[in-house]
Every structure is written in C-alpha cells, then in structure tokens.
Image (cartoon, rainbow, N blue to C red; front, top):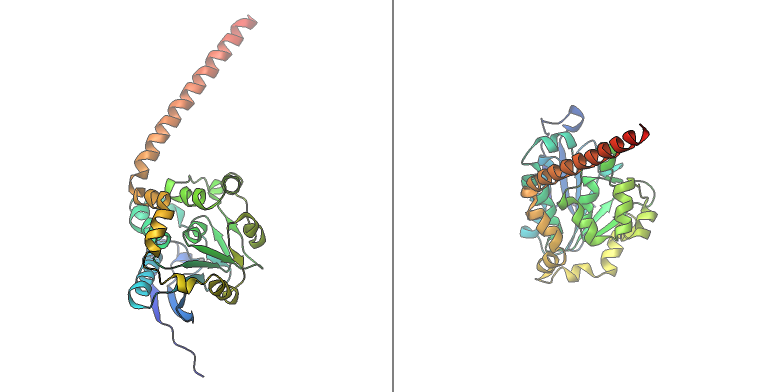
Length: 280
C-alpha cells in the first residue's frame, strides 16, 4: 500500500537575520494520525527556534486545520529527534521591538485559546520559550527516554515577562514554578509527570491512546471549546493581549528597582559612617 500523503505541507523560509546554523529551511507537515486527529510535525534545523518565520508558519498551520479540516485534536511534535524546541533566538528577539507583540505572543494566544484540544508531544528537549510553547497546549506528553524540560532564563540573564510567567502560575503549583525559574531545574519526563508539568509519557501511539481515553475527539465537537478556554486561561490571555505594553511596565519596574537600590546603598553608607565614627 502506498504511503498516505500528508494533508498539507508548509515551508518555513530560512531567516537571514539569524546565524548560519539557524538559517536552514524547515517545514510543517500535517498528517492524520487517526480519524480527526491531526499530527502537526515541524522541523526547523537545528533546534526549532521560535523565529518569526517559524511562528508565522505555525500560525498558518493552525489556521488551515481549523478552517479546512473537520474538528478534531491537534498534536504538535518535532521531527528533530533531539529537540521539541530550544526556545527563542534570544539576541535577535530582544533586538526586534515587534517580535513579542507581533510574532511570539499571537502564536501563544492562538494555541492557548485554540477551539480544539491540543497536545504537545515533546520528543526531546523543550527549553525556555520551547517549554512555554508546550505549556500553551491543553496537554503535554513527553518521551520517557530522552530530553529535559527547563526554564533556564536565569542561566543567560533573561527576565520573565508577564506573558511568559502567567501560564505557569495558572497551570502549575508555585513550588514547582519556583524551582523551575530560581533553580533552572531540568526535569526528566518522569519528574515532570510527578510535578504535573506533563500529562503522560510516550510517543505517538501513547498519545493516540491518551486521546481515545480522554475522548478528546468527541469533546472537540463542542462549539464552545475555544470560548471556555478563553475564560479558563483568562489571566494568560490578558497578559498576552497586553504584551505590547509590557516593555513600558518593565521599564517602570526597572526605574523603581534602581531607586530602591540607591536607597539601600545610602542606608548602608550612613550605617558605615556611624560605625566609623564610633571607632574614633
């Protein structure tokens, strides 16, 4: 029997603004893994960075599934065996004033409010923005044999913006979230399952079994599915919608932090002066 052709294929054009290692062309391939279960497999070598071209192709793929295919379940995964996604191309992301509000946040908002069940099948590492993208899905299944989940912003000096943090506050307990961000803790699949970061372990077969067990294909037929998610995750949606204003709020926060630091230095200087006079 000849192989079943994909439902559609989208090409991810190479991004000229990133390093040569991240400029290879990628693709999104959508196949039907089971009746009304859509497997959206992406590959953007070497590690599926969330650059604008990748994000735009991801958005278009979600649009095509919603607008052209029967309602069902969307499973996203990577065909790069080592990585689900290694997150942002950080230096270029922070250097582009439109990246978050016009590229990354629209993708995350689309995922978190998507009107069908979504599952991130994490075949390998999901770091920083890659893990955040997986968290925007309704469910997460992880390869039990390899890969780590990690929020490693502390390691490269990045702050957490509100739209990045709120999804973890909503979906995880605060102790787990604290350990993730203040310790850059790396979680294996079994550790992540214990902490409630993921919902199961396995590959495509186990994910399809999860879909069947949870009756997700049937639940996808509910016309209010996306609306319910908008309310369920309203804090996340609000922070994503206000993402364009985040830079102003963060600048105000930086000014306040600098003021408090100067006051702390002044108090320490006054204390040292008193101690020095006492010694005379």
